[in-house]
Structures are given as C-alpha cells and as structure tokens.
Amino acid sequence: DQQVKQNSPSLSVQEGRISILNCDYTNSMFDYFLWYKKYPAEGPTFLISISSIKDKNEDGRFTVFLNKSAKHLSLHIVPSQPGDSAVYFCAASAPAGTALIFGKGTTLSVSS
Amino acid sequence: EAGVTQFPSHSVIEKGQTVTLRCDPISGHDNLYWYRRVMGKEIKFLLHFVKESKQDESGMPNNRFLAERTGGTYSTLKVQPAELEDSGVYFCASSHLPTEQYFGPGTRLTVT
Image 1 (tube, each protein chain N blue to C red):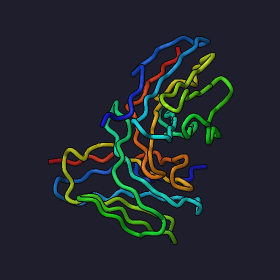
Image 2: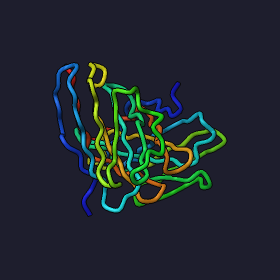
Image 3: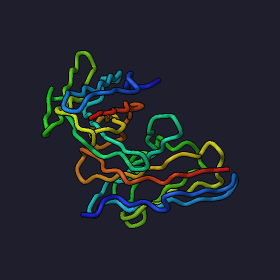
C-alpha cells in the first residue's frame, strides 16, 4: 500500500501562471516532508521541505503548504516558467533524516 | 562544493553476474542512503548508513544485495548474483543534517 500518493500523473500550465502539485499521505507518523524535482537521466534535486510543526514554508517562487488534519500537502510554483517542466516527487519521513517514502511523481509541463 | 557522485552511470550485465555500484557522498556528510527506482514504479529506500554503520537496512530486497561503507566515506552496493528484476536506477543520497537528502545522478542497471 502506498503511504505517499500523488494522484495526478501530469499537469499542464501556461508560463506565468500558478502550478499547484498535490500530495496525500496516510501515515500520521510522518513529520518531515520534502519536494524534489527530477529531469530525465538525472537524480532528484531537492526543492523545498516542511516540518510537521509548520503549515507553510516559502522559498522564492516555491511555497509548500501542509494540512495535517487532511494529511495533504501541496507545492505552489508562482510564476511558472518553462524550465520548471520536470517530474516532481513528494516525499516524507518519520522522523526527519530517516528513509524517504516517495510518491510516484507528477510530470509538470509549462508551455510558453 | 561537489555533489554526490555515482559510478558507473550505466551498467549492462547478464543474469547471474555480479555488479558493484559506487557512491561518493558530499564531503562531510555522515548520512548516506541508497534508493532504487524500478521502471514505472516509485523511488524506494534500500538502506541508510551513519558513518560506517548501517542504521537501517529494512529496504534491502534480499541477501543478494550487500552494501558497505568503508571508513565512513564512499559506499558500494554489490548485487550477486544479479537477477532480471534487479534492473532499475540506483540512487545514492547523502545528508549532513537530518533534513534534506541530496541525490546523485544514479546508476542505471540493466540485467539481461
């Protein structure tokens, strides 16, 4: 059974608009969440993270929101750029620093 | 600062042969992790070293897989004998703090 779920395999957005990627989890013991971006033939690149004691973390164009009661987190990218086109993975761990549990990823396509 | 490096980038071996993958973490990172992504599936945790000690090897699929980390520096992952289902991309990651993990480019293993 999947503990981290990314239910949208793909998302298409126009340049300049907001991209919203969603992630749901089932394990209430998760206390650290991360988003990674991956280009073909490369390893995942760390984007942004959030601890379970927070509900929002922002870094430039990237903001992650955590809703613990709904066991849901989302990544907002504003404004979206063509270079953001990649596969985005949501990951969680319990506690931080231990094994990451990944979702299957969402492919984001940003058109100019 | 150099990132996580992995060698080789690609390996093609026959079923029953032995393959050794190498990972050099970011200098100073005590935590080293191995992950695997089988075609079409999510990235899955294999094991976690803290310095030279195995902290968690719950993700190792079977005893055909042997991981070592001599002197707490680089790590090797040996598959012996390789089976068809071992094909996939093997990622190594490292971290200093128990927060984000930084991934290498991966080794693509093809078992024929």
